[in-house]
Image 1 (cartoon, one colour):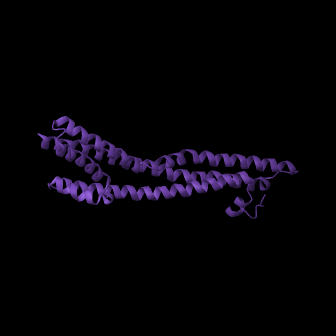
Image 2: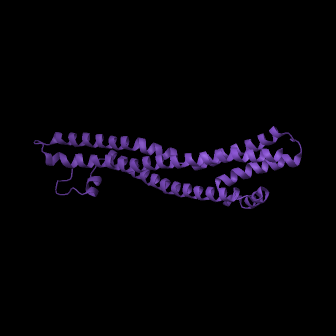
Image 3: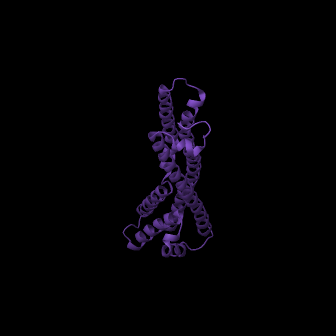
Length: 226
């Protein structure tokens, strides 16, 4: 064990037992991945909000839907989630109208509705990607860190068996290095929990906007069929 005169963080980590070091390494890797997903998801949600707002402005500006659909179709990869949902519904609706195989109101709208629901599910799956990792990190990391702490404290007390006179100075380094595992676990868990709650809220709001748009767009198509 390190002496009390050398209690730096690096020294404590380097002198920890191998299982505790492996747990610390695992938590550091999880923390790095978690922060990577936090920043990437933040950028993706911000971009989705901006693209959704821009498409809603274009859609409700009163322009020709066919022209809007054509502009989106030519640059589909650059458009936002809501624009792609609109594109899927409008494409299916126009196919049904051109084919003449579904002149009735209900079959025509059902095709557009199914196409938009499928596009909606794809977009939501993309927005929700990596959220499960953040949730798992937030819930499991403290327990993994606690496992490292328990193992480290056990190792410290076992080491006292060879010491004739146990003092606080002899047990403090072992306990300190063990507690580092818990600290790393909390460092990995807290940002993941905060980010997960925040991003889940933002994605739920986007989901409501998407579903509302689908209903409103179907009403517009219904008026065009009549």
